[in-house]
Image (tube, rainbow, N blue to C red; front, side, top):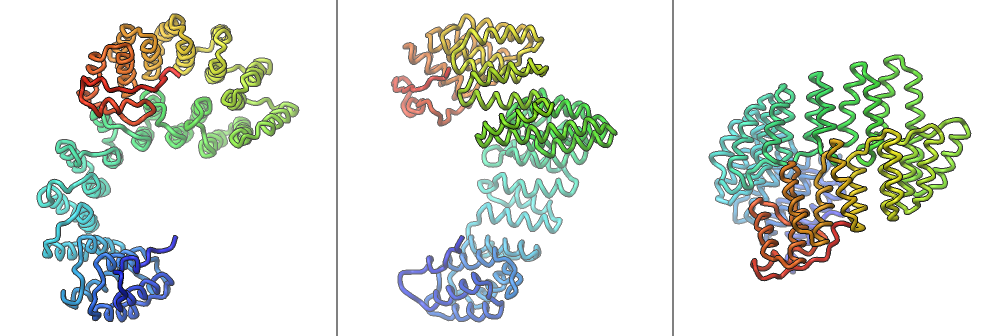
Length: 570
């Protein structure tokens, strides 16, 4: 990418000062700018009657700050600081006054040049100018103070000398990190509480929580803090959970880590790295069979849960360490098999995938259930339900028992083509084979029958799900509530809405807006407005999506201005 030329900052008329500045920039771009040449050109530029703008100078200093070391100039950031000092010594009459951005760049240069002692000095100069400082300026100062092991001094500036409207989560995070890195995570936790109490822009985000939690984990205080974190209601991410899993495993509490991963982490959070933490712990403790069971579970879930080569390597290595050579080799072949076929499917080379399956069978190598399931999934997603069905039934013939994932994919295929009778037949086959349907299976069944207006059957599946101990999630309730709203059965929709609350299932925007749509479409604008008020009271903000609900929020309540163009049940 070409560098931003300093000439773009110039005035419309030509001046010698700008020519010299461009010459400086040219040497810098070609990596031929020697410090003595830079000082010579810079000094000549300062002597010109028409000074360059502060913005142009900032561009030069910023370019020097980012300049990689070269034969001509080994330290661009240090050169930028030197030129600024030379400019300051020249006097105000011979230069354009620096701005807060100038000082921000120079403070950053001091950090890049590994001169933490100069940062506070520049900050002091900035204070004397009376220029209004930004959060970036303070954050840079905090970095210097923390690098100099003066974290408490940085904290004092943050809490008592920094204008209250300036600190943001980045300012706090610099100090949080310093406390955690120096083994003082309890102080970081105290600061986190101060942030939460102040609220607004001071409120900690998930990265701040992750930072403190990681520090506490190193001091064996992580699990207790994680419980407090969940109570705050903040949305945790995969880094949060991975840190917690690592903490449990380091404390030889792998079973607790596994329980957290399988039952307490949202389905969209764990990735292969999260699982690998537990896989490694099992293998390190001579429990490679447990690791294999988890690996197979990952493969069945698919998507972001799918094991990668690192996951396989961990378990293969574990079996070798335990002397289980046969299991290690079998797993290696499965990895190759699954990887090649998945690769063909991902690139749309279905013929190659089938050719490989045929070769495998001819050599007496039967494809695993996971491999067959991957093929079925591809076929169903591309509308080739008949071929997916053939693959499904071929598993039973070859002695491979379809699992819950296999059944759910086939159910989805039948749902796509509207084959409700085949879905019932498949459910009966599941019962005969002793395969217990999971939440995904039930959601597919409920949605398929709700879509075709068969709410009587859909609700039978809903009740059966509860009897089997499978807890409905937000999507389950959204399907049912949406279908009732479309049919005008608002009392039934309201009953399920209240049931969601009783079951502890989180209410989100889609559910509320579904109820709003239902009441509006069936002439009860008062009820619709009541739900919108509930949303606002619960601080549930509507967000842009395919439903045009925003039109209502732009008008006062009671105007009846509302537009709906959604089909939530589809």
